Amino acid sequence: MTSTATAQSNVGDVYCGTGVETGITIVFGAIAGLGLPATGYYLTKSGLDYMRAGGNPEKKNTAKQELVMSGIGFGIIVIALISPELIDNIGSQMGFSFSDCVKPF
Image: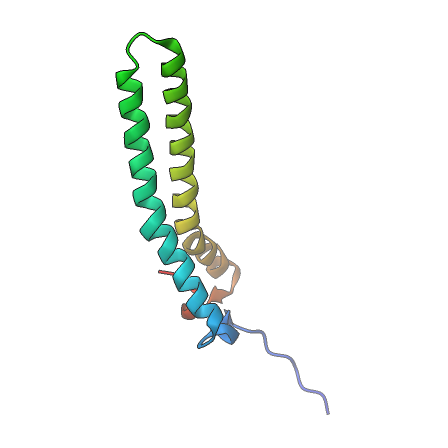
């Protein structure tokens, strides 16, 4: 007798109650708790350096480069924080969803 295989409706159910669930929470908490304030600090610092550069083109270019890098870092952090929700929304349109225990927020 053969039985039909049933598809897993919630991706990640197997990780509920394990160290993976805890790890996901810790990693995304660290990104939000440490990454966003650090990015704000470097954006502020490089912005102030740019304003203080005056007419010195070397200092202006260095500060501008730091400002761009800080902005890129902020973008990476924001994408990392919203990507699980975006992936879940796309997955729900395709017929599957992620388990609540593997969603970081």
